[in-house]
Figure 1 (cartoon, rainbow, N blue to C red):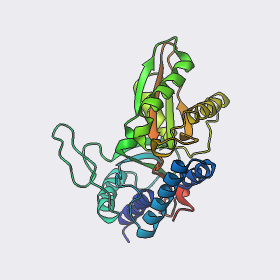
Figure 2: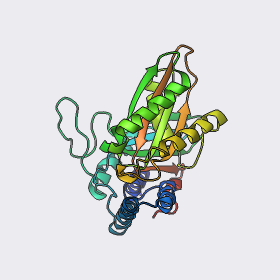
Figure 3: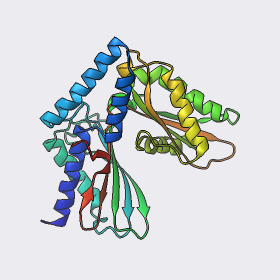
Length: 295
């Protein structure tokens, strides 16, 4: 088999897996939250969630009708042999997965508002690159950005004296005002940096981190735990109809910032936070570590 076709076929399968199955950590997180829930409505809703997941697996169909806009976050080794063709291969894989999985046609061009019909358009799928020197391997994180879970996303630069208390307030105000629109229980990614653009991108990268992990900086990790504890006390519950918990996780990623500014970004994942990670080696053997148990 032609190696580029093999690479495309691997990516088509990967896209389908992420569309149909939750990553292992999100599935186990929902299980744990369902076991803690003691309200009648909450228990019924978690029952619906797991019934939905089982039907998606049995029927081999996406677990949500909104299959999102595909976003690829790539760590590419400079010696990976197919780097020159990778972007075009991702685009072709997106088109093919749209037909085979199938995926809803979600890409609409700006200004003309015309649906492209294949989930490919201007800068869609979105691809963000990170180059890894001296490596011949490829790591891809895929995120399916749905409409509801994208609604609470926002970023801003805080006034100098607002500090880290201002970050917490901004996160809480956002989740209280908009969280119910994103199909809770939520995964909340928080980015901290100099400007709104870097903070927003870091918040998306925070969302890609598995539920249950913590930032290696102990101060950031403590902030993650405190914000999760506080947000759970709001009691948004599954699908926003009240319950014991509101969020599966709060993940923080940050960059060193200008002394006069503190940018903060928020990206939210719904209960069906559909992301996946794949490692592809130069011989095109591969693993999908995010979905070891799901398939």
